[in-house]
Image (cartoon, rainbow over all chains, first blue to last red; front, side, top):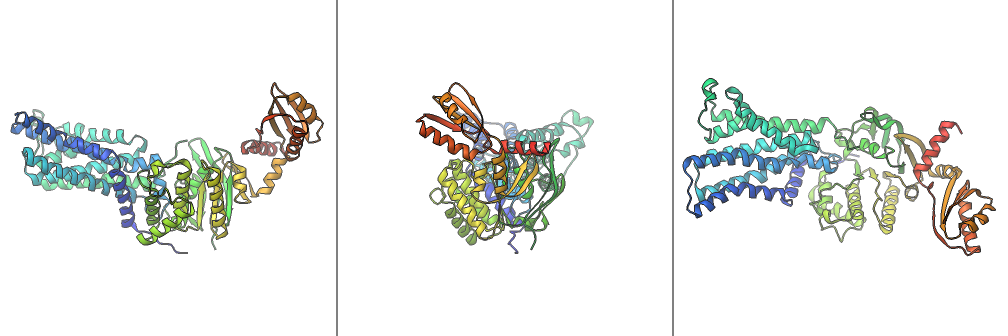
Length: 252
Length: 311
């Protein structure tokens, strides 16, 4: 007897719907959004008390917001996408259905992106309107979108690889890519997503002493977009291959 | 027509530990009980059948096709796992509806099928509450609903009666029997003999990852009856009861404790009858009667020892 099979796109949408409902009814999303709003709240309080930030301070704040706080929020929202399903055992309801296994991380990627990116963009718009922005809004929006995408994909891959230690794995991977590799002067820096995010948003700090020995490469905005999208696809592929090719053994 | 479940020389290793070892098995239809004590390999076997695990050796096929990543096979099965991990943020109805959609139904079909399945497991009252708030028995029923809602050909139920009260238990058993009558192939696991006995006479006995026996449950019942039983009686006058029971033909030996008595018998049914009669005749007060051997673990130990010694 032939039975209907949903198809890959529908399966991805089912997973996305599931991820959307679960995240919107959980606490992580709202906690993350409050975390994301904290710098603006701080600035608003400072303004109310008569303290104003100079341009350098605003740039530093925006830099920290874009490549640290937003990345952290993206990781916190997304790391459980596969990991929680596996460790709680609920992935079985997805994977014993006629759906490709990789549709689970893809759907969760879609859901996390649709939750994090609009919320982050909204915050930026409102925050910039209230306290001003040191960089052009269009560049910043692009950087924010790509930052969220690459970090959501990274968190999903970490969760798919090590579901029982997903958040630690994701944070360690983030620290290596965003901090350690970025700290290396010269061409190696261009592996780090943070380099490209700052490059896109115009938030790269002035060249340091080490850059005199190993100069920072000049990278176009288009290259940065391509690298960030490539990294997103790479992380998603890791997650998809992990869930499709290998089983998850139960705790014995 | 292809065989619903076929395992050939199937083994699954977790490092040095064998979850399932060289299992050869065919299930051709009807309701089949998968019996075994805890740790026998029932859940591992079911996980292999549902494509959650890949065999370390051998093959497993459903309806003549391998299971892993086979969407056509997945479309024909319904599975209710042993554990309680579900999408707790969803309501029961949302959960079953989503499962129907994931089985390939459109929204209208899925909603209808989900509502029917929820009614079958008598969960209408609680269907719009979040699963997070459900009791163990309610979780079992909603898991069962998602397993049957899309009308699968093969239904695999891992310990579906655990945590259910007697009324729900009876209802689920009747539902399983009804699905069996409709021509579904159903594999039900349990470590409790009488649970399986209530839904089917076809059984597969698993012990330490291996199939010990397959066939009719009456054969197992006969083996249990051959198996020397101990009956422990907590009572106020164990010596009086011991004297009376020693005279009974069914009793092999009697051990008297301070406020208890242990009988050993080859004929448990007869022994229970004689015990009850003696208690009534002599107006003795009995606090509890238990049988430490009346469980599958003891029976399996007995069966494996018997085959090892060639008795």
